[in-house]
Length: 386
Image (cartoon, rainbow, N blue to C red; front, side, top):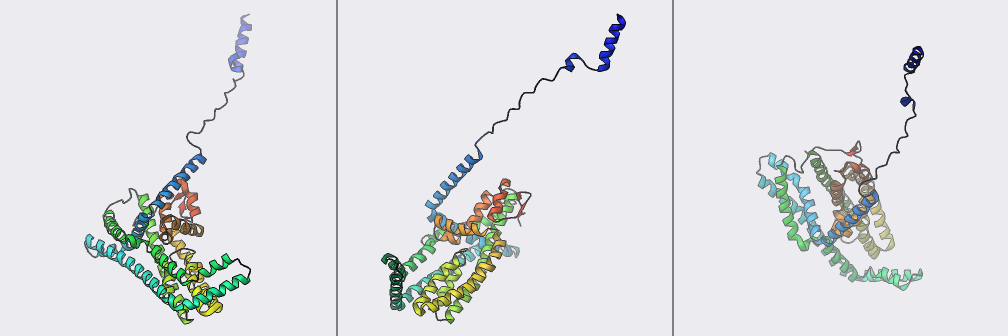
């Protein structure tokens, strides 16, 4: 019996199993999937869109204040680099700040004088061509009637050539573009305060709190300056060429249209069309359709070549904005803060991108869609301040 028991124990030890070990494992409980905490992505997107709409409605309501403020900020950004060579030469900071303010005032004064001079010349020219305008309007009315257009359509087309309408349009345009003139004192005050603050911030080790934030700020300021330098350079070239062509073919007051070409060059994409319409209409009045077609052809050769084919490459290198976003920016900011928004559209769009997209490492896709491919590993590239 003992041997039998021993054999059974030996067999059990040899197998290395026990009744408990040989039993099948108990089934595992199914994993419980954790429910996401917080709002869904779609809800967050809707809330962000609603908040953006509220913010932009507030900007629209305060456009009379924010428009001059934005203009003063942009002019200060453009004039600020004057400070650095002066301070390196040993100028005191207060004197370098004064130089920045003087340069900013010169920029504002130059633009204001250009617009005032152009508006005065245009308004003074209209009475001399009142008869031609009336005859052209009647010819257009007859042509519209012969083409089967309704009286309302032909009347709307001919009313555009009415001298009173053109005077009203010129006056309203000058008032709109110089809308800051009603608050010009505030623009000048903004420039003083911003130039002084720029000097104070320039002495800080980290202006915006971190190297990454300073890199974003540096890119924004340098981008705004490069954008306006590029536009001013190409605008001056286009203005000179357009003015010479218009003078050569006998279009009245060519200097006014040259100034208009220079100013509208700061309006992305649609500035060319705005600058073309007045001289083309005047050519139609004084020389008929052949002369108007010559003006359109000349503008297409000069302005399209420089503003559409060449300039966007330099602008893209300066600000890294897509063409679609640039065009939408003009329409959007002109609606939000008025006509001055068309000229300030690119800096304002760059500001929104710098504040909302560039600091967020999850916004690499939106940055690329905006036209900025300068990302590394999905994150915005940090540029150390200089």
